[in-house]
Amino acid sequence: MREVCHLRVKPMNDKITANKVVTLAYTLRDDSGEIIDRSSDGSPLLYLHGAMNIVPGLEEQLEGVGKGETIKATVSPEKGYGPRVGEAQEVPRHLFPADAELAAGMQVVAHDDQGRQIPFFITGITEETITVDPNHPLAGETLHFEVTVEALRDATDEEIEHGHPHGPGGHHHH
Image (cartoon, rainbow, N blue to C red; front, side, top):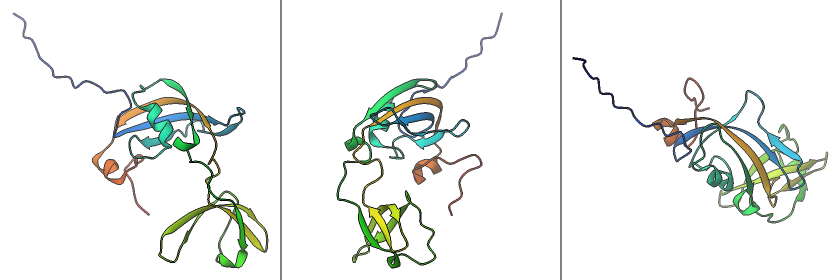
């Protein structure tokens, strides 16, 4: 008589759900089809699903997608980087530290009189002025993603606590 071995197999959840670390290859285009951004070969994007690591509209459309699947997702400004609010302004260069290495596209954080953070983006630099914009460069834009789910895994307790995925060998805060 043959002995029967009973194994308990934990069902694999190979779909994107909360607290999964997701590895994505992506291409992002604007309304005209121009490529705005893309992941590099060998450098995919890792994010923790449900932790607001990516724009909400893309995260919503990735819910339930499986490993190996490719989707096309259109994200409205309201579910992306928001509508444009306010306008760019020129401010005197001397308001920035003299040794600050500034560049167009850089995000900078100022503080108001109550100590609240005010993020803005540098859009232009001259010797006399810095042009700052309160809007993300993609604010007001409809985003067109093509995304392939390359890998999925359960997040560690530490990743869930920190709100982002950690790379190989863990994570070290700076």
